[in-house]
Length: 427
Figure 1 (spheres, rainbow, N blue to C red):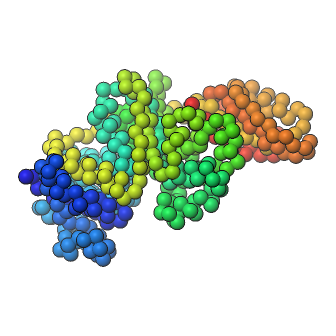
Figure 2 (figure 1 turned 180 degrees about the vertical axis):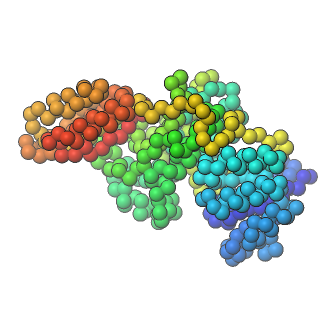
Figure 3 (figure 1 turned 30 degrees about the vertical axis):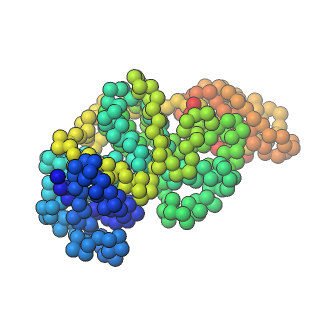
């Protein structure tokens, strides 16, 4: 039976979950895969944490050199998060001839070109299923099962924290601030939630997924990003009345005119499969030219779901000697000539607070007309002649730049107290 030595860098939530799976399922892997996965080292400065998990003291390392020099270690699992010191440690492991499995989306998104080049040079495997969408096997699907397709688009809910917050706001009517505090208490959101709520986390993941899907490097800097901090319960309720659910979506499209990649809140019809993806669950809705529509759904985070993806990569690495790398030239920047669409098309939900006076609507619709925007729906609340009342418009598909221009012109109308919300609508 083949023995495979494993080292884990970091025993936090995910690292601890991974250790638990590897040790508790060791006999099962012997039986089903004919491999003996042995945790030979853990890198953890808080020795008491490792001891509490049952790690032998002799296997606890306090520096990466111990692991790189250990001939019994074949695969290094990096679950530290962040760029440094994770990047330094991963490069050290690869240069020592160890294959690497990582869950670190920021590191892989920003430096996959450097990591992959080092892996190739040293004939090592580099695996990253757990970097995107937790336990959902979306990367393996894109690398293997869907290779017979030209992927036309992917639409995803790929951040569990924001999906939990928006679900709670939608179902319970609680404010963003209230739900964020609850999410932080439950451990769904960090003390500093910026990476999640401002869309950075989803942007890193979309960079990885869209690069795989479209067979070309999609740097995260090319992705339009907008977070959920401006979403209000009021707009969620108006959206519900119109048949929409609110989600933070990661959108990638590969069309004849170029590649479109964006992360932002959006209304989607309640009958769309993604509308029922709630709480911390994630899903990716993929459209291929042959397979048509495929949706992958499951836990997007957590110790055991993410650990499941990590251990899946470890087993794959241990049972496959012919390592595979990117299907495109993996460079820091996009390939020359790659066209990115910034002035993308979408429908829009626009809410303004306007004086309830004769002629105001005519001014608004005149601006829309000049900007080439056609209105599909309009809702106006009752109010007194002097009161600023909500007026809601849902447009037909139009260009992003046209809407931005219209919004600036609306803000200049004295009768418009505020352009309160602009939310894209995805059909």
